[in-house]
Image 1 (cartoon, rainbow, N blue to C red):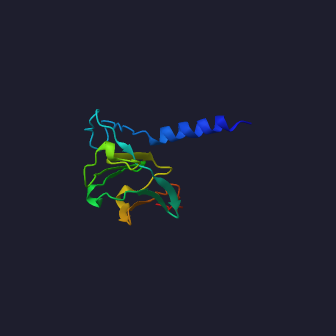
Image 2 (image 1 turned 120 degrees about the horizontal axis):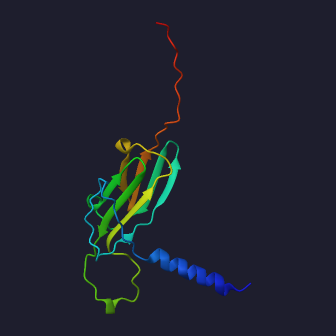
Length: 149
């Protein structure tokens, strides 16, 4: 079997992963809907996993002031927006490699289970954003004793 076909697939996947993504927001949402169509946003990379009774979203946000992060949580989804700004202006001709993303970024993700937005927390430690969202367990049942009147 030739490796060329496999290599082509990995090249195409790398292209898709590195393309900036525009985020559109439904009008009914509480999320700010003013997004400039001329401006592309970088796609924030995330990990989503469960840890006991919590759903956890983690992402590297090094170089971003925590006050510049905008996090919106509903019972079914989470959206993270922010902007990473360069501290100095460097001309394109002066770069040997330019792999870091600078500018606005965002990411929205549907959660695998319903969570409680009111009890959710977000913290940045060593450039890693961690959002902890407690799962809602609506499947718990309660046995009721019927009383005679």
